[in-house]
Image (cartoon, rainbow, N blue to C red):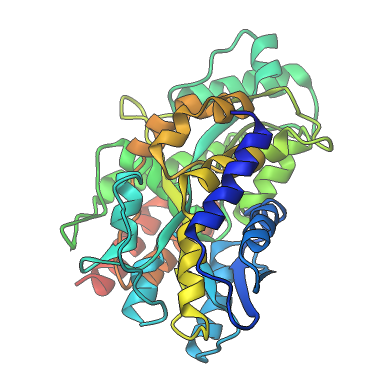
Length: 411
């Protein structure tokens, strides 16, 4: 299907899913992060408006991190503010918002087309509380031109990555070139930073609602990241680096390897990118002889319990979660689909060929613990990771602190 036909299909889907024109104007306001391609979503909204007279859709965007977005939305919801109708929620949050009665259930929804992880994330006590906006997982981005230059294969272990990064940076003799960038700031990304090598050792954090923390594995995870800093593979102030900082530094040509989410790909290929056409993507490395694994991400659309246009908001969310929109956002925004069939769409694979390999990564990525107290779990991990990376505490002390805090939270 050509892109023009795909756009036409989007418009047709909007028409088929639309209700008769509203008797009065129905303004809908949707919150989307600044990192989630709001300019591309705008095109989808325009198409929906064209086929649903009376409905207007405004975007409210903000929040450079998941935490800042959640802080803002928590304030709005706590105030029972009706100004937002639809909320884009991090995959870790639908259960929290449903427990707080901040979102409304979505009835008569066929969830069978979605990837299993997103069915689980959006279903609470048998009720669908949100619908998938797009999938996500962490990937290893690398400078393909530099790996080719030094005859280096994409690393499969963190030791291989460290050796490759040192070889490249020593060979390039560029003081601005970092070996590796990842998220060390006390943000949600730092939770994944901790969990990647922890999971790689075959360990879990929570199982069947019970804490299964392994202190030795946690020490090894924290020590891995601190050693990469001490060895000069990652920069000394990595504890100040957030998700989009990693993206910007890699995009500027100042990083050989980067840990980041799928959204970064489209930006790396942009007209203003110094690395366009020079980027490779691989599975994240394993720790020692462990399993290569990734951290599951993704965003979901929920309908605010305080919206004064719940019916129209539900219809819009259903449309936004359709396969046509999933493919459109993959092609135009490099956002990973939540519908498995979209990974086989010829137009998707033409626009983003590496998505052909991404499905297996998304399907096997591990989810962070689903708990109503996830905010506390996240805070315990990300603040400790940050302290270890900044040299305030040792990896051994950090593992002990995480264990102690999690025991109090999940007792």
